[in-house]
Image (cartoon, rainbow, N blue to C red; front, side, top):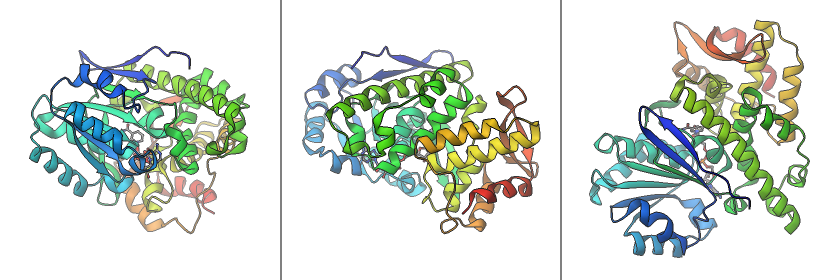
Length: 381
Ligand SMILES: NC(=O)c1ccc[n+]([C@@H]2O[C@H](COP(=O)([O-])OP(=O)(O)OC[C@H]3O[C@@H](n4cnc5c(N)ncnc54)[C@H](O)[C@@H]3O)[C@@H](O)[C@H]2O)c1
């Protein structure tokens, strides 16, 4: 694969998070070569997604981590339940019992949920120890790991408590980690990619619109022949690079929460995750959230309806849902979650919309429940 130049997240005055591409981190022989110069002889804790451990059979890999880095390894079940106070309490205690100190490292290998939890724990120990993330889902590689935000879910709503802390390193691996991902989770990763394409990167947008790669039509990435697999790897690396470049640019311009594009589709999206008890995945919920935010933009800012068509085209092309099934949608849970959302204040929910110049607005727009719910209703089927 073409060598990709590393990128950097810049945070506060002099904190830097290096984004490193395709180092073949899962090869056992690379463990010492890659981690030793970073971790040296400091105490380190690996938080590893249990699904990944089983599917990729990481037994020998973990043995080697223990032997060569003297690492403590925690295997955790990935999924939203990991972003809970229960997991937080349990694992922060395990880390303290295993002799953490202020120079220690926490390394997360998993999807966005394991990264959010491990990042949260590392940011709270002595008010912040070293953190490295190795995302293993498309969603985490494109978005969740390229971040300084960590969060837990609480009291029937998403991301209610959290911290800001920059990882020291983020390793993006595309070579074969997605082979093991369930198809639905793979496509789920495209929602945040589409968000960046619509809101910030014309290059990425054109690439997605004109993309004729076989894997998109085939839908199943684990049923590709050798040639198609090569095409897939090349394409997904390009897409990830463009998305990560877009997120890095925005982050370095105005870090953390201040970047409006991050919120596009999220006001509705987070509440849909809760309303469906997470049967609707993060990316799927954000897709529907973006459709509602786009319709609100059209009606509020008198925009041409073409932008909705463009978004629908990409959502369909990348096998994301355009509706949430009424069988999994609970309005009571939705109503309660949306009122606990961070963007709910002064009696209104607030949305990031597309402005009259077809750009993502930098201002939050207050919108009453009935107005956005009337639009959302069309997407519940
Ligand atoms: N911190 C941020 O800035 C940020 C940004 C976007 C999203 N997020 C958060 O990310 C979370 C979603 O992340 P996600 O979609 O990665 O979910 P996830 O962590 O739940 O992973 C999805 C599923 O895939 C499994 N898995 C992980 N890697 C695998 C692999 N390579 N092969 C097979 N199975 C694998 C997991 O066990 C899990 O069952 C949400 O909680 C969302 O709020 C955070």
